Length: 363
Ligand code: SF4
Image: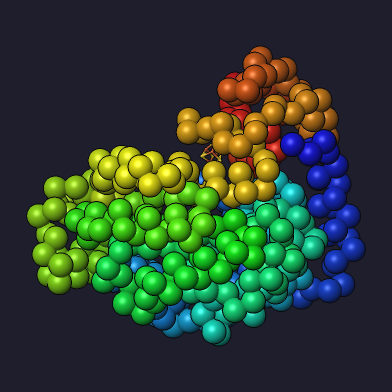
């Protein structure tokens, strides 16, 4: 891991906020969701746009009320600024995930996707991961921005029946092209739809292996009432889904219910092993490894080459925050601190976990 201290990253945040101020429309930036949102498990999702026109059968974006494709109103610099004022965000360290709630390479969004990636990479240097179903028209541009960029291509099945607008063979071909130019590619098998994903999975995995991917990530299915109805009626999956849904009732029409697929994941993992593919526990793992970093933040770790950083950064951080504390445990497994004066806020914990990449507990 790089040798910078946490206070250096926070100073970098401060100085960039000063230097870039004149380049942004502050009102717009403050209103934008990137300035406030808490990163999720795979990191901070950044949105070059909202909505998607690919019409994948399982997609719940339509149930979130996003019915058309619109481009983000932010410029690349404004996105950088929004991230800098986000109290949960740490330059160089917070994982960046591009490609949720939209397809980043839709023709009307591709340029914005490049612009966002270019600016994040130039000013903040955070590790970037993209998930997509369409192929970037200029892969060298991605590589130039982030030479270790992690690229996930999604597939729900070999037949492609749930993703009618992008042929599976085109996606596999794209992975081959990207791997050939040096991009670290991964097959994202998601969402796992019982029976449909399982069918011919070995052929799909073999195709991914031949295309040069570094491994696969498996992702679960969540259904809204509409998705449940379509999968039940069109694909005769009602009984199978009902057996696996973690709740049988929906609260409202946008409610998402998780579908249990761990048994199917284990099967796919074992087939992947047979064809010579490793399975990353989550997308974040592929991003961490692609960038030569290490993480031990959850029970699936350590991922990559994890080294615990010096504890001096904790003392410096809390001194700056005027919080009196003592470290009770400092290990590769977790950091436990006891506070005697002041208050530790949720963003403090997140910043420390983002920097040290182990769970931080506060007493
Ligand atoms: S330990 Fe691995 S799977 Fe867990 S959060 Fe870190 S990168 Fe992700």
